[in-house]
Image 1 (tube, rainbow, N blue to C red):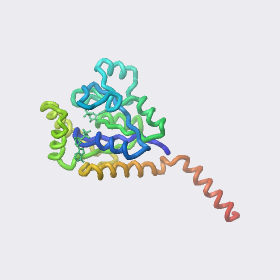
Image 2: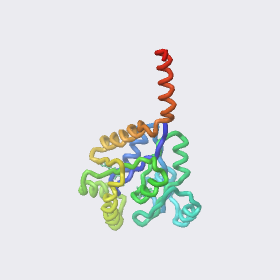
Image 3: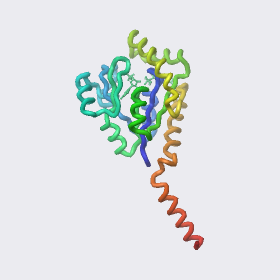
Image 4: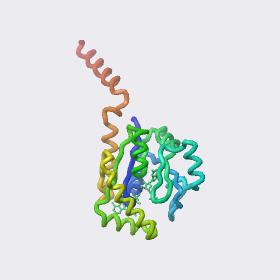
Length: 210
Ligand code: ADP
Ligand code: 5GP
């Protein structure tokens, strides 16, 4: 198998974290790239599992050392993908799921042209608001800021190769899973295709005595 990065983006509350978690439960051929962030942890979030929660000073130092494959400021906090995380998951022979915003996805697109970009859309604006409010992780100011950014982010959906509507969770996960399967079979990704075809032809030629 030829593992590849799978970039999942969505407006805040769109469901990308939930979809990523389900994919990790259901498939043994995917791993998760844990990002660094300067955002404080939410209740229940654990450093080294959800994110590496670090100070702005440490973030700057690590960025200056070139540790990030991409980084961006989102909703007033810094987020970055560690090169070491991408390497860790790829070394396990797994596709790397990355939950990153549209700015980071654009940066990674040029560094990893073989990455697959999937944009997760909420079924409606009302449903997005409902889910964000129900998650109860944001205060009023933060919620308003996330909604402003959501508008901007949705405009970038056309830069993605795939768009998945997250109406029913099970169906949305199945759609992203289908994207992974289809992309795995892409001709460009099939390992050593030429040699495989050559060996097939040689075997057939021997059989018919050509
Ligand atoms: P994101 O990571 O994109 O900000 P989350 O994965 O945290 O979004 O999802 C936002 C909220 O919506 C969470 O409380 C999650 O449980 C809920 N949620 C996600 N997908 C669905 C769905 N298909 N149906 C109902 N609720 C959902
Ligand atoms: P949250 O604070 O809700 O976990 O994430 C806020 C936003 O930051 C989301 O759009 C999420 O995709 C994005 N994000 C998370 N990790 C990274 C990262 O490593 N890089 C970038 N560019 N964005 C990230």
